[in-house]
Amino acid sequence: MAIKIFNTLTRQKEELIPLEPGKIRIYMCGPTVYDYFHVGNARPFILFDIFRRYLKYRGFEVSYVTNLTDIDDKIIKKANEDKVSTAVVAENYTKAFFEDTKRLGISEADAYPKATENIAGIISLIEKLMQNGLAYQINGDIFYDVSNFNGYGKLSGKNIDELESGARVEVDTRKSDPLDFALWKAAKPGEPFWESPWGKGRPGWHIECSVMSMKHLGESFDIHAGGVDLVFPHHENEIAQSEGATGKPFVKYWMHNGFLNIEGEKMSKSLGNFFTVREILEKYHPAVIRMFFLLKHYRSPINFSEDRILEAQNALERIVTTLANIDSSLEDRELGSSQANPSLAESIDDLKQEFLNEMDDDFNSAGALAKVFDLVKEANLILAKNKLEPAEASSLLKIKQTIEEFDSFLGILFYKEATASSIKEATLINMLIDVRTRLRAEKQWALADFIRVELDKIGIELKDRPDKTTWFKKITQ
Ligand code: AMP
Ligand code: ZN
Image (cartoon, rainbow, N blue to C red; front, side):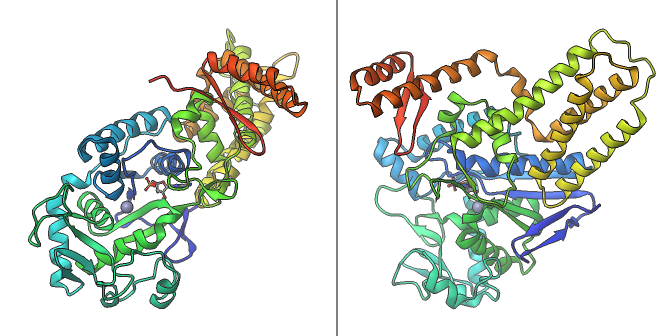
């Protein structure tokens, strides 16, 4: 069966036919390195890495590039607040990004280009746009002239009028059209700058992705990915810049993940309703976070709630426990040449094929995991027997090998490392929180406070939210 991908550009599922047979080139918009990575940010990085690994598993040669936005308004603001240079801010949070992605089991991209290392390429792309009549200068600022690019709006599926009325775009009365966007920003006093044909300045955000993706993957490549918030204006602008400069189709398939929401709103740094990956990993194993995302289709919005995370943890525990039980029942057993029970072998093969069909269908990881649970169920039925026939033992081995093979891209079985003690610790803390909630309901403030203070002493901080109290291990660094 062919692999199908939902393409934002055409608004339908399409068969994945690489531009170059056997080879898939993917660009994924990376982080702006001015703060710690939050769990919402982690969603595209976890999932698109899994999809990339899946495509490799399916036999494609895959190039995967993620940029680092290391100069930007937010970085300048943070540098001013912390009284350090923008380079220091970018360096610190780039380091934190790599630490966090590594802990989350995200494999390294093939390249991590940085905006500040691509200024020459950015300047020459802007020059090309000016030659093509698609950019204009006002006092050292360069803007893209949206009205001159045929097809602006094709990714978001809106025409210019609709975009103008609904868009939240930078207001600047000097622009010919509100949708025009900055390619190059003239330096303001105290800001970092680079020399350019238009004077001192720095690049806009959108242009860097056009430059870095085409530098590493060519003027036309297969897949461009990111969160759904990037469709407009970021990705729309990337198309305008790249196609406006080269005259060639920029990207064949555009893929966008849905938001991680919290209490109905997008988890985001600007709204302040976020949990950093660091906070969450104090409490949950990284494989649980991966499982949490895999249990939902990547395009669907997903609600962050502790209950859902615990569900993911339980689901993962079921898989890992069954694999451990298979190990212990196969220990010291000579499987020799015995084959899996034929009818069982067939149903394992069927489930494996169904798993692949789900993944091939626009990476339906939730549907695929349901097949893993069916395999687990089959294994548990065999494990429940008093005596294992050789054919049944071989079936168990086949199930285990199949799940481990899938793990080459799912990357969830390292959960095995989670110690039973940390799970017991979480259960005890949740129990104390329950007791405290009841004490508070009965207005027994002194005892309720006693619990909070004592937990705090051992590094457990409670957060009282309107609906419930949650806890975090305090970060000691
Ligand atoms: P940023 O560093 O904010 O530019 O975001 C990096 C990536 O995370 C982008 O692909 C965003 O679309 C994505 N992203 C940010 N917030 C969320 C969220 N709450 N849910 C899902 N993806 C998000
Ligand atoms: Zn980008």
